[in-house]
Image (cartoon, rainbow, N blue to C red):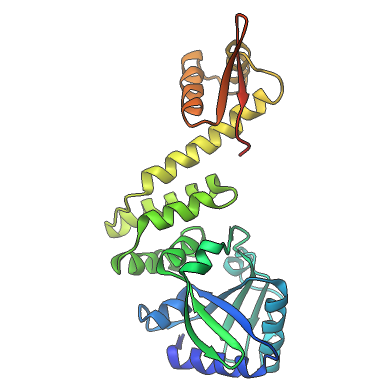
Length: 272
């Protein structure tokens, strides 16, 4: 585990090796340590706005004694990092280029919420907001992240910001499901009940419905009779179930309905 002093010393050395100004965004345990919400961390998660900055940072890491890990542990391999680098003390940097965990992207709204922590030579270090750190931790599979989510929640969070950022991301249905599931775990283990859990799970459900019905509608099954027949053959659901789900999708403006003579035609409005 590495303290704030250890992290500061490492960033100072790295910044001194950079030839041009580079901005790095810290998330995870390192950012929480600088925020005073953790005493120490075992790794440093960093994300960059461009591949060039990530490359420069990795070059500076190598010049200060860090090497790439060729066979990372499974939990780190699953993160989808651009690179994982470690020194002889086992200080570890998980480096991401714009996208974290092969999932969430470093958005303009995230960058606007981040604050400049300190400049280390040519290295400008920004701390991601507590809300965005919470969101990132909510879509990982690392067991230790749930405890960090508890710490962040107990310190106070703007839940609406977390919800809006999650739902604005590409493939938002998947991330809403993963975060919502993590929030259910948070409630079960720590009795913390975020007010956005239901909205996230509903969004995930609608996304799954849109995918399911989109398969049949895109294949030309456009009337209720045709759609219901296909659903029944594939999933054994009743006509009433299919009608109810179509109503939900129409209400959420995922599916549209138009009348052509006596035919009621369903069509996809939004690509998911």
